[in-house]
Image 1 (tube, rainbow, N blue to C red):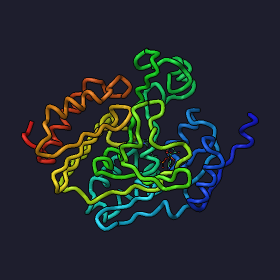
Image 2: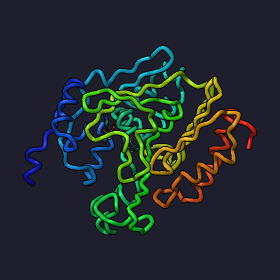
Image 3: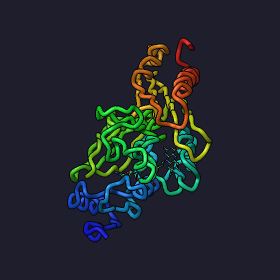
Image 4: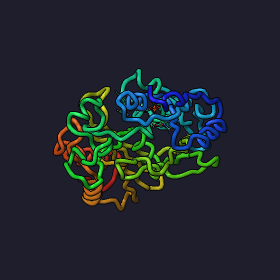
Length: 319
Ligand SMILES: Cc1cc2nc3c(=O)[nH]c(=O)nc-3n(C[C@H](O)[C@H](O)[C@H](O)COP(=O)(O)OP(=O)(O)OC[C@H]3O[C@@H](n4cnc5c(N)ncnc54)[C@H](O)[C@@H]3O)c2cc1C
């Protein structure tokens, strides 16, 4: 056994101040565990750092799901199964229920949480593999190598994809993240959590921070959500498109699984132009050959989903 394995701890704190204290003590040597459905797989594959593990499962404050005056507050430990089964969410925020229902499998959704989903590690065909597989082709840039196996380049660019399905839905809804950082609560637009660096895709939240909850404003008047994947269950997204239009005529369109971070396009509904939006989406997307579905097919489906979204949000003129 390696010496450091002896000193690694698995702690189950019972309050947020206790987690804050542990995060202060262990800093970047710590890692919070929510449902563990992503983290434990990565650990088994040797892709998560050896760290002290802080299990969030016994902190009631993080499990709260409550309606606010106009919107909704979702504690980071609320599970995807709770989101898909809540009658309140189904009636007021059907897009949240639909996005949750589209993820993984019913069994995984029992333990997978919204916090873990929003901070799920980026994926790539050349990264999410066993140690043996990775070693046999030469380790990639996101692992221990110096070359991106997708592009064959050594330019420091990692094209791993953000595959969270709750992220595009909640970003399209205009959600804010409430984070505990250095003992203080801070708040930011959810999209600010993400960075376009595939090596460090959650640049907006430090390793010593805790995502406390997500706050969602009043529901939109119209929405669109659709996901492309190989099979209707288990498989990760090859493309997710979410969009909303509120009563003031503001439209928010968010695309995911086609770049290192979610792509957000916003504008007044009457001013958005289909060709410009698709042009922007194509420029910002980084569709490379690191998914089960072929590049051209995903590009074609991006245009197709945006056409559907245009109709669902009643944006004009129709493409
Ligand atoms: C077979 C399979 C299929 C899947 N399909 C999909 C899919 O289609 N769509 C999709 O979106 N996802 C999919 N996933 C990923 C799954 O959604 C995530 O594994 C799950 O949502 C993560 O939640 P968790 O609570 O288990 O997170 P964990 O695995 O516990 O944590 C994930 C990451 O988030 C961090 N974290 C968790 N909570 C907090 C917090 N409160 N503050 C700070 N950091 C935190 C952890 O440290 C870790 O880095 C799939 C997973 C599997 C295994």
